[in-house]
Length: 324
Image (cartoon, rainbow, N blue to C red; front, side, top):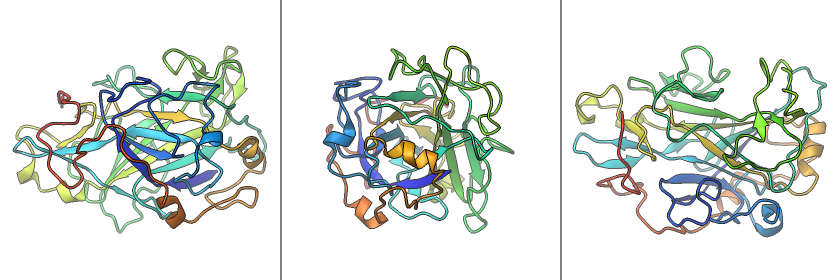
Protein backbone atom coordinates (compact mmCIF):
# COMPACT_ATOMS: atom_id res chain seq x y z
CA UNK A 1 0.00 0.00 0.00
CA UNK A 2 1.03 3.60 -0.56
CA UNK A 3 1.19 5.35 2.82
CA UNK A 4 2.53 8.87 3.08
CA UNK A 5 2.42 12.10 5.04
CA UNK A 6 0.77 15.28 3.82
CA UNK A 7 1.66 18.13 6.14
CA UNK A 8 -0.70 20.97 6.93
CA UNK A 9 -1.31 23.39 4.05
CA UNK A 10 -3.72 25.68 5.88
CA UNK A 11 -6.53 25.85 8.42
CA UNK A 12 -9.46 27.61 6.77
CA UNK A 13 -13.23 27.95 6.67
CA UNK A 14 -13.79 27.11 2.99
CA UNK A 15 -15.13 23.94 1.34
CA UNK A 16 -15.12 23.70 -2.50
CA UNK A 17 -17.19 20.47 -2.43
CA UNK A 18 -20.06 21.11 -0.04
CA UNK A 19 -20.15 24.91 -0.20
CA UNK A 20 -18.37 25.95 -3.42
CA UNK A 21 -17.60 29.65 -3.60
CA UNK A 22 -18.62 30.35 0.00
CA UNK A 23 -16.17 32.42 2.04
CA UNK A 24 -16.70 31.51 4.78
CA UNK A 25 -18.13 28.00 4.79
CA UNK A 26 -19.99 26.96 7.92
CA UNK A 27 -17.18 25.16 9.76
CA UNK A 28 -13.40 25.01 9.99
CA UNK A 29 -11.27 22.52 8.04
CA UNK A 30 -7.67 21.39 8.02
CA UNK A 31 -6.40 21.07 4.44
CA UNK A 32 -3.35 19.27 3.06
CA UNK A 33 -1.93 18.74 -0.44
CA UNK A 34 -1.54 21.12 -3.37
CA UNK A 35 -1.47 24.88 -2.94
CA UNK A 36 -4.11 25.53 -5.62
CA UNK A 37 -6.82 24.81 -3.01
CA UNK A 38 -9.51 27.50 -3.01
CA UNK A 39 -13.24 27.99 -2.45
CA UNK A 40 -14.20 27.38 -6.09
CA UNK A 41 -12.74 24.30 -7.82
CA UNK A 42 -15.23 23.27 -10.55
CA UNK A 43 -15.03 19.61 -11.66
CA UNK A 44 -13.36 18.74 -14.99
CA UNK A 45 -12.37 22.32 -15.78
CA UNK A 46 -10.20 22.56 -12.67
CA UNK A 47 -7.15 20.30 -12.56
CA UNK A 48 -4.94 20.98 -9.51
CA UNK A 49 -1.97 19.26 -11.17
CA UNK A 50 -1.93 22.03 -13.81
CA UNK A 51 -2.42 24.92 -11.40
CA UNK A 52 -0.63 24.10 -8.14
CA UNK A 53 3.04 25.00 -7.78
CA UNK A 54 3.79 22.88 -4.68
CA UNK A 55 2.35 20.20 -2.44
CA UNK A 56 2.68 19.33 1.24
CA UNK A 57 2.67 15.58 0.45
CA UNK A 58 5.69 13.24 0.36
CA UNK A 59 4.97 12.39 -3.30
CA UNK A 60 5.82 15.61 -5.13
CA UNK A 61 3.55 14.88 -8.14
CA UNK A 62 0.47 14.61 -5.96
CA UNK A 63 -1.33 17.96 -5.98
CA UNK A 64 -4.60 16.45 -4.73
CA UNK A 65 -6.36 18.02 -1.77
CA UNK A 66 -7.38 16.07 1.29
CA UNK A 67 -9.32 17.81 4.04
CA UNK A 68 -11.21 17.09 7.25
CA UNK A 69 -12.91 18.89 10.09
CA UNK A 70 -10.69 20.20 12.89
CA UNK A 71 -10.97 18.95 16.47
CA UNK A 72 -11.34 21.31 19.45
CA UNK A 73 -11.10 20.95 23.21
CA UNK A 74 -13.93 22.60 25.12
CA UNK A 75 -12.78 23.80 28.53
CA UNK A 76 -14.83 23.98 31.70
CA UNK A 77 -15.20 27.75 31.26
CA UNK A 78 -16.71 27.28 27.78
CA UNK A 79 -13.69 28.36 25.71
CA UNK A 80 -12.14 26.33 22.90
CA UNK A 81 -8.62 25.37 21.79
CA UNK A 82 -7.77 23.54 18.57
CA UNK A 83 -6.26 20.10 19.24
CA UNK A 84 -2.79 19.67 17.66
CA UNK A 85 -1.77 16.56 15.74
CA UNK A 86 1.01 14.02 15.85
CA UNK A 87 2.75 12.59 12.79
CA UNK A 88 2.08 8.90 12.16
CA UNK A 89 4.54 6.08 12.81
CA UNK A 90 7.49 5.93 10.42
CA UNK A 91 6.70 9.31 8.85
CA UNK A 92 7.83 12.89 9.40
CA UNK A 93 6.32 16.26 8.72
CA UNK A 94 4.14 18.83 10.47
CA UNK A 95 0.68 17.84 11.67
CA UNK A 96 -1.61 17.11 8.70
CA UNK A 97 -2.98 13.78 7.45
CA UNK A 98 -1.59 10.32 6.72
CA UNK A 99 -2.93 9.29 3.29
CA UNK A 100 -3.23 5.72 2.01
CA UNK A 101 -3.90 4.32 -1.48
CA UNK A 102 -4.52 0.60 -1.01
CA UNK A 103 -5.02 -2.17 -3.61
CA UNK A 104 -6.73 -5.48 -2.75
CA UNK A 105 -4.47 -7.68 -0.67
CA UNK A 106 -4.37 -10.56 -3.15
CA UNK A 107 -1.28 -9.07 -4.81
CA UNK A 108 -2.64 -9.22 -8.34
CA UNK A 109 -6.00 -7.45 -8.74
CA UNK A 110 -5.56 -4.14 -10.56
CA UNK A 111 -7.42 -1.01 -9.62
CA UNK A 112 -8.17 2.11 -11.65
CA UNK A 113 -6.70 5.52 -10.88
CA UNK A 114 -9.09 8.42 -10.48
CA UNK A 115 -9.74 10.63 -13.55
CA UNK A 116 -9.06 14.41 -13.62
CA UNK A 117 -11.81 16.36 -11.85
CA UNK A 118 -12.74 13.45 -9.57
CA UNK A 119 -13.87 14.21 -6.04
CA UNK A 120 -15.83 12.45 -3.29
CA UNK A 121 -16.98 12.76 0.30
CA UNK A 122 -17.02 10.17 3.08
CA UNK A 123 -19.08 10.61 6.22
CA UNK A 124 -21.82 13.07 7.14
CA UNK A 125 -21.07 16.26 9.05
CA UNK A 126 -24.66 16.40 10.35
CA UNK A 127 -24.72 12.97 12.02
CA UNK A 128 -24.92 12.89 15.81
CA UNK A 129 -25.71 9.19 16.22
CA UNK A 130 -24.39 5.90 14.85
CA UNK A 131 -27.39 5.24 12.61
CA UNK A 132 -26.57 6.26 9.04
CA UNK A 133 -22.79 6.17 9.39
CA UNK A 134 -20.74 5.08 6.38
CA UNK A 135 -18.31 2.19 6.63
CA UNK A 136 -14.73 2.62 7.75
CA UNK A 137 -15.13 5.76 9.88
CA UNK A 138 -13.89 5.34 13.43
CA UNK A 139 -11.78 6.47 16.40
CA UNK A 140 -9.13 4.66 18.42
CA UNK A 141 -8.14 5.60 21.96
CA UNK A 142 -4.45 4.95 22.56
CA UNK A 143 -3.32 4.35 26.13
CA UNK A 144 0.34 5.28 25.82
CA UNK A 145 2.42 7.12 23.22
CA UNK A 146 5.46 4.95 23.95
CA UNK A 147 3.72 1.65 23.18
CA UNK A 148 3.60 1.58 19.37
CA UNK A 149 0.86 4.21 19.13
CA UNK A 150 -1.83 3.83 16.46
CA UNK A 151 -0.68 0.44 15.21
CA UNK A 152 -3.11 -2.15 13.86
CA UNK A 153 -5.93 -2.23 11.35
CA UNK A 154 -8.43 0.64 11.71
CA UNK A 155 -12.05 0.12 12.76
CA UNK A 156 -11.23 -3.14 14.54
CA UNK A 157 -10.97 -4.13 18.19
CA UNK A 158 -12.11 -1.37 20.53
CA UNK A 159 -12.39 1.31 17.79
CA UNK A 160 -15.65 3.26 17.90
CA UNK A 161 -17.67 5.49 15.60
CA UNK A 162 -18.04 7.99 18.44
CA UNK A 163 -15.23 9.90 20.09
CA UNK A 164 -13.69 7.85 22.96
CA UNK A 165 -15.59 8.33 26.20
CA UNK A 166 -12.49 8.63 28.38
CA UNK A 167 -9.07 10.28 28.59
CA UNK A 168 -6.62 8.74 26.09
CA UNK A 169 -3.03 8.73 27.35
CA UNK A 170 -1.60 8.37 23.84
CA UNK A 171 -4.08 10.49 21.89
CA UNK A 172 -6.84 9.59 19.42
CA UNK A 173 -6.48 8.10 15.95
CA UNK A 174 -9.37 9.14 13.68
CA UNK A 175 -9.82 7.16 10.45
CA UNK A 176 -11.83 7.82 7.27
CA UNK A 177 -12.10 5.15 4.55
CA UNK A 178 -13.59 6.12 1.18
CA UNK A 179 -15.72 4.00 -1.19
CA UNK A 180 -13.82 1.89 -3.75
CA UNK A 181 -16.37 1.33 -6.54
CA UNK A 182 -17.10 3.92 -9.26
CA UNK A 183 -19.88 4.20 -11.85
CA UNK A 184 -17.20 4.78 -14.49
CA UNK A 185 -18.90 7.91 -15.82
CA UNK A 186 -19.28 10.75 -13.34
CA UNK A 187 -16.41 12.50 -11.59
CA UNK A 188 -18.85 13.91 -9.03
CA UNK A 189 -22.50 13.79 -7.99
CA UNK A 190 -24.78 16.31 -6.23
CA UNK A 191 -24.14 14.79 -2.80
CA UNK A 192 -20.54 13.82 -3.73
CA UNK A 193 -21.38 10.18 -2.90
CA UNK A 194 -23.77 8.68 -5.47
CA UNK A 195 -21.10 8.18 -8.16
CA UNK A 196 -19.18 5.85 -5.81
CA UNK A 197 -20.12 2.88 -3.63
CA UNK A 198 -18.63 0.48 -1.12
CA UNK A 199 -18.07 -3.14 -2.28
CA UNK A 200 -19.91 -6.12 -0.92
CA UNK A 201 -17.82 -7.56 1.87
CA UNK A 202 -14.25 -6.47 2.43
CA UNK A 203 -12.34 -4.45 -0.14
CA UNK A 204 -9.07 -5.87 1.18
CA UNK A 205 -10.39 -9.38 0.41
CA UNK A 206 -11.38 -8.23 -3.09
CA UNK A 207 -15.10 -7.86 -2.40
CA UNK A 208 -17.23 -7.41 -5.53
CA UNK A 209 -18.43 -4.00 -6.73
CA UNK A 210 -22.17 -3.55 -7.42
CA UNK A 211 -23.27 -3.66 -11.08
CA UNK A 212 -24.16 0.03 -10.90
CA UNK A 213 -20.59 0.90 -9.90
CA UNK A 214 -18.42 -1.69 -11.69
CA UNK A 215 -15.05 0.10 -11.76
CA UNK A 216 -12.75 -0.89 -8.91
CA UNK A 217 -10.74 2.01 -7.43
CA UNK A 218 -7.87 2.08 -4.97
CA UNK A 219 -9.00 2.40 -1.37
CA UNK A 220 -8.25 5.95 -0.18
CA UNK A 221 -7.94 6.22 3.59
CA UNK A 222 -7.06 9.08 5.92
CA UNK A 223 -5.62 8.81 9.41
CA UNK A 224 -5.43 11.85 11.68
CA UNK A 225 -3.54 11.56 14.96
CA UNK A 226 -5.08 14.00 17.42
CA UNK A 227 -2.69 14.81 20.27
CA UNK A 228 -5.28 15.13 23.04
CA UNK A 229 -2.77 14.46 25.81
CA UNK A 230 -2.48 18.09 26.94
CA UNK A 231 -6.19 18.08 27.76
CA UNK A 232 -6.48 14.93 29.87
CA UNK A 233 -6.91 16.68 33.23
CA UNK A 234 -10.58 16.01 33.92
CA UNK A 235 -10.78 18.92 36.35
CA UNK A 236 -10.69 21.17 33.26
CA UNK A 237 -13.47 19.29 31.43
CA UNK A 238 -17.03 20.64 31.27
CA UNK A 239 -19.21 19.09 33.95
CA UNK A 240 -21.48 16.24 32.97
CA UNK A 241 -19.60 15.07 29.85
CA UNK A 242 -17.76 11.79 29.23
CA UNK A 243 -15.20 13.47 26.98
CA UNK A 244 -14.39 17.14 26.23
CA UNK A 245 -13.63 17.15 22.49
CA UNK A 246 -15.78 18.53 19.69
CA UNK A 247 -15.34 18.63 15.93
CA UNK A 248 -15.45 22.03 14.26
CA UNK A 249 -19.04 21.55 13.01
CA UNK A 250 -20.15 21.41 16.66
CA UNK A 251 -20.09 17.62 16.90
CA UNK A 252 -19.13 16.37 20.35
CA UNK A 253 -20.31 12.83 19.56
CA UNK A 254 -17.78 12.03 16.80
CA UNK A 255 -20.39 10.44 14.54
CA UNK A 256 -20.15 13.42 12.17
CA UNK A 257 -16.44 12.79 11.44
CA UNK A 258 -16.00 13.13 7.67
CA UNK A 259 -13.44 13.80 4.96
CA UNK A 260 -13.26 15.29 1.46
CA UNK A 261 -11.10 14.16 -1.46
CA UNK A 262 -10.22 16.06 -4.65
CA UNK A 263 -7.95 14.25 -7.11
CA UNK A 264 -4.94 16.13 -8.44
CA UNK A 265 -2.08 13.77 -9.36
CA UNK A 266 -0.03 14.53 -12.47
CA UNK A 267 -1.43 12.80 -15.54
CA UNK A 268 -0.84 9.04 -15.55
CA UNK A 269 1.37 9.04 -12.46
CA UNK A 270 -1.02 7.44 -9.98
CA UNK A 271 -1.95 4.60 -12.35
CA UNK A 272 1.74 3.76 -12.83
CA UNK A 273 2.22 3.69 -9.07
CA UNK A 274 -0.82 1.47 -8.51
CA UNK A 275 0.24 -0.93 -11.27
CA UNK A 276 3.74 -1.10 -9.77
CA UNK A 277 2.22 -1.71 -6.32
CA UNK A 278 4.29 1.06 -4.80
CA UNK A 279 4.71 0.72 -1.06
CA UNK A 280 4.72 3.34 1.70
CA UNK A 281 6.20 6.76 0.91
CA UNK A 282 9.22 5.90 -1.24
CA UNK A 283 8.67 4.44 -4.72
CA UNK A 284 11.09 4.39 -7.65
CA UNK A 285 8.12 4.92 -10.00
CA UNK A 286 7.29 8.27 -8.35
CA UNK A 287 9.07 11.49 -7.53
CA UNK A 288 9.31 12.21 -3.82
CA UNK A 289 10.34 15.16 -1.68
CA UNK A 290 11.57 15.54 1.86
CA UNK A 291 9.22 16.40 4.69
CA UNK A 292 11.07 19.71 5.04
CA UNK A 293 10.34 20.55 1.40
CA UNK A 294 6.67 19.68 1.85
CA UNK A 295 6.43 21.95 4.88
CA UNK A 296 7.63 24.89 2.80
CA UNK A 297 4.37 24.65 0.83
CA UNK A 298 1.68 26.72 2.54
CA UNK A 299 -1.35 28.84 1.75
CA UNK A 300 -2.72 31.88 3.54
CA UNK A 301 -6.23 31.74 4.97
CA UNK A 302 -8.98 32.87 2.61
CA UNK A 303 -11.14 33.59 5.65
CA UNK A 304 -8.88 35.43 8.05
CA UNK A 305 -9.92 34.58 11.60
CA UNK A 306 -8.38 33.00 14.71
CA UNK A 307 -8.36 29.21 14.59
CA UNK A 308 -7.60 28.51 18.26
CA UNK A 309 -3.96 27.43 17.96
CA UNK A 310 -2.32 30.09 20.09
CA UNK A 311 -5.41 31.66 21.59
CA UNK A 312 -8.54 30.43 23.36
CA UNK A 313 -11.76 31.06 21.45
CA UNK A 314 -15.04 32.08 23.06
CA UNK A 315 -16.93 30.00 20.46
CA UNK A 316 -16.16 27.66 17.59
CA UNK A 317 -15.37 29.38 14.27
CA UNK A 318 -18.71 30.05 12.61
CA UNK A 319 -20.36 30.05 16.06
CA UNK A 320 -21.36 26.39 15.80
CA UNK A 321 -23.75 24.96 18.39
CA UNK A 322 -22.07 22.17 20.33
CA UNK A 323 -23.85 18.83 20.80
CA UNK A 324 -22.29 16.16 23.06
